[in-house]
Image (cartoon, rainbow, N blue to C red; front, side, top):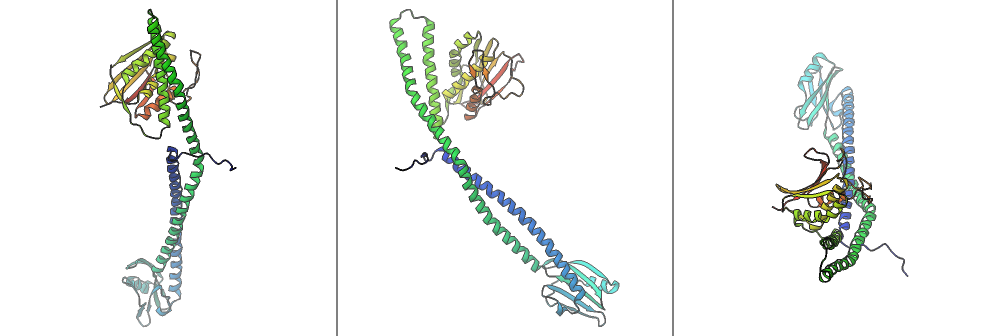
Length: 412
């Protein structure tokens, strides 16, 4: 029997695409780092080589000027002019370029003697020239820069070739190592996605049965109980609404596990807020707090129904937890956004508090439930998913309490 191998991964999953992008990014980053290092080394090497070649040329120029008596004694890369003061004869190298000899320097050396350093412009560039008067002669020497230029070009070519090979190898090595490093994370995300989709799918079946039983319960009560109290009818309807909301949560989880993109739909945020406020009425009454909805009767935004309801539910639940006596939910259309403001009269929000970060708060609430600081973090994620934003701070009317704002793009 064959030994079990690594778990098979779904092909063309979002994790595969992210893994490929991460691999390329790491490879390109590695190549960029090596390229920067190669360019730095090449620059330093070229500058050092130029200084060394210039020093060597100066040394050869001085040595030749002090030792050469005849232009035929000079090597091919030296430009030499010799003036014999006894005979008044001037002799120069056959390949002397335009600009040489430096007649002014020769004349000055004949008059004042000693050494004269000048720079002459030639077709090969600006060339340092040394003129020395000695032994009834004036010798002028310059070094042909062609040889040094050729050496510099060879150094640059070798460094660039080595650098190109190094950049390619570094990119490939970075991509390979990056893929090996990121692969376990991609596999973990794939398993997580599979778990979320499988669990959500399996839980939808009993939830559908629960919703059906609630509907049947409502019908039986209508048919068999003639004097059904309105409160009982309201609770049954609320139970059905809660089951539908929970089904929406599972649909969202399935949607999140699906790698296909989904376009947002028009959502009446004002109507959703009314539903949330009505559903939270019992909780507000149990906490002895008033819960009021104000603002526009219709406010349509681009989002999805279930995430918006979850976001508003989390905001209202948070406000009821911290309010002293009253919570107001205000929904308005302001320009191109639908703005929901949830205002309470509680202790407020401390300066610099990161309420929209996961696990930013914890402990038990007034109802004894354990809180994990996830509700407002999910609100922020929903807002970001639909190109909206959230904020939290003091109340605009400067009264005691907090004001949390949830915005979504309005339908134009």
